[in-house]
Length: 444
Image (cartoon, rainbow, N blue to C red; front, top):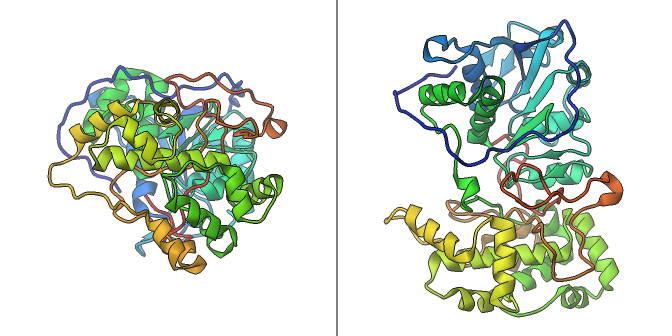
């Protein structure tokens, strides 16, 4: 299902890859073998995501220095299985084969609005209880969450679906800023290409950097992508679909249109004719995000746009984004994106093709909100070639003592220290993308 091409080379990056957490890993059952990888397929999944683990773990590349895995392609439900393109697949194994696997990979799930088959969830739970490593690529994270394996854990998924994952499973610490998250015996990745990154990480964990580099050369991909260590993260900035039909949409529209002004959440609550406590509760229940968290992230996003498309100084950018001082901008910018505004601008301009068009200055979400709540509910990103904001809280101290990015009473997990190993997530749940087009169609 996947073809190799080219003979490009790749070298190991000195950047630190996401590392496993200290969570205790269960002892692997004697009948399970760590080199046996079961890939669990469902009907309705895209063929590209499905083929990623098949290519990484299912092709013998020992001649290139890549240790061999044994692949078991398993049907998660009765077949034949049909891909999004209408192709029919027949898996050689069923759920019973999961009992032999030391690694179980769920590469995708057909619909974020549908519950996975109970039999498949039970097989995944049993595999995990017996020590198997469980991996969810892209929307496969929804299957892991439905099985209860992500409760109290950090996780990621495609940025478009991160808000839905956070709202539906509030005990999961969702962060769409990460390419992948390794939490020891449970791992998740973001969109399509990030699935390749996670599979390479698994090979690196099992067999070392040389084996992962050899596999990366065969796949003609870098062993480790550096963008997520240099601040060039792709962040989601759309509004969630649910807000379009809510009266708070008008308040959100006003906030987006007046980001250049200095106002706080109290002002937004007053515009909504609510007390601060009521406004915070309504906003969080609707979006999964605290209003101050959302507002700070929108200001950072506006700063991103100005740094990319204007020649304003950093001080001028701070004023035009409603920050009280350039120091406040720099602090929030670094906490959310891992770099200073000046470094971000330099890196962006160095990487941007000369003929790339300017990004629109007016957010698509704001334009949709101006047209009314129904339009806002379907708002998407116009010209989606630049960064987008995941609308998660910066991990540092916010501007208000009333802001709480985490929910310690649910998780009991402390805030990890800031540092390059960003896969140790902050546990914040964010306001993210609307679901453009058919909302239950997996994307990559």
